[in-house]
Length: 250
Length: 217
Ligand SMILES: Nc1ncnc2c1ncn2[C@@H]1O[C@H](COP(=O)(O)OP(=O)(O)OP(=O)(O)O)[C@@H](O)[C@H]1O
Ligand SMILES: [Mg+2]
Image (cartoon, rainbow over all chains, first blue to last red; front, side):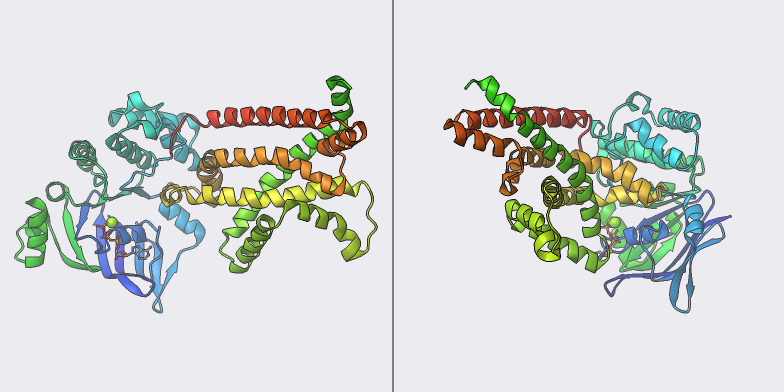
């Protein structure tokens, strides 16, 4: 089943094209990684997919439902109510976590569930279950400012998972972390992959992307320069991809 | 003339001073919030009007504003001013003036909340008002507490400006007694009163700040 489909996405800022005609799709249980140099539009693509940014053109489809559709060269979004329902399928993990600083760890995970209409008991037991599986139980009463970056990122992953998204997006989830903490977060994402969580991951961690992904997209200047399975992409003879991948691995 | 008799004579003025203080906070704090929300609104006209309002309130003396608001009904609308309007004019002037200062403080508070907080709330399914009340406002309150405390302490002293239209607040009365008795003591007593009042206010503000101390931003 197709979870996400993006067709001919376009996005520009003040007349400057940042995403030019990108199409991709993600099936249930798949992991898609997006790599590419800084400024190539990876974050913007993710922000379009998660509707933090409005697209200028193209279709955005979740589970067969159109969130946005191109009509007569314009991008028309679904109604507020439809978008609200469609958004329930989406989770997003930020590079800098964006935890709520005034909430304890537990409340960070519980509060959004309450907003979604769950009962306090259900929300708390789900939160405790996630904290346990992420090794954060002892930290549940702490505040984000009392946690390491790696712990904060794991909390933010728990916060996203608590809403049971159909697809989880990550925008460079480890680039604010030092190597040791990076490893601890990557381990969690790998664990999710092994549980067949559908994920789209923007990352600079080439080994990780290679190991985990079903499909990798290499972006440059708002285009997909190359894409394929990790095996294909890492053994490509496309010089641009080779040098990018090689440089980061060296 | 003993300190006790002076304080007894000043009592009524103290009541008025405290009333000006409390009523001004009661009206200006929420009004400042309304002003800043309009100031930050996407509507350019509304935003510009609020900017002008803030700049006038901050750019002219409060005493002048009190006098203008007191005499405006008579000079502009030719309505006779009743004596009960005196106190109302003071409250209106103080509230409008302090709302502008609070609006600027709130604005810096809103601007210091990272954009990522709005985005996180958005993807987690918070609607606009839930985002505002659950996520943004609590953080803004924490950030603005120190500058708000400064402003509140200034207000304690500013209440004496009500003498401009002969409101019978503390300072006005102290001045009258002082002139009549040819003694500085009433003014000293008034000073002592302001000092104690301010100490209490500062202590209250510190207590509130402490309540918000459980997390860092
Ligand atoms: N809100 C915005 N307004 C104007 N320009 C923007 C905005 N957001 C992104 N851009 C521009 O779009 C281009 C792509 O940015 P984007 O953040 O998507 O790149 P990226 O691939 O995620 O880069 P990085 O690897 O550094 O995170 C950049 O040139 C950036 O300056
Ligand atoms: Mg980016």
